[in-house]
Length: 158
Ligand SMILES: [Zn+2]
Image 1 (cartoon, rainbow, N blue to C red):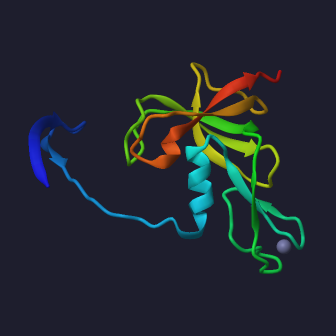
Image 2: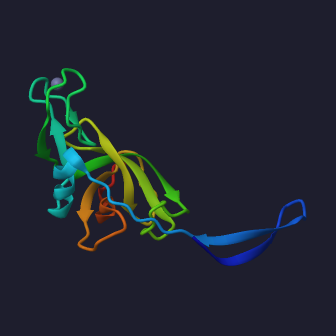
Image 3: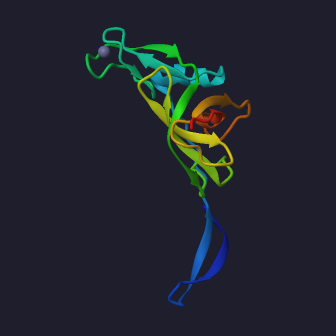
């Protein structure tokens, strides 16, 4: 950890205060365990979900075991499309960085699975509820594997 600067500010009350600019770095290794097929899917340009072979329940984010009957699930590929449930413009970067602000963050109900994802949508305007989006994959190595994906507007629903 190191202090890279000091900023002088004035509170609304008129009292002066200082802001320290602090840089911290951490390194860690995180095993993804049974979620490995999901991360390999990101490398291969596909979102992957799981399905229970007993009751047919599906999950995204994927689950290894069915919550209803504890059966081990199987993996399958999603079409990569979905619909906006809600969206907003975000003016602060995510904790792991790698995204320029402001950006559009949306809750997306994915096609082909009971579930969805809250993720970045590349758009100028905040998409309306029901807007059809499609996942895109980047080849760059981002700060987090999930930053390899973003969604783009495919069809605007009036
Ligand atoms: Zn089940």
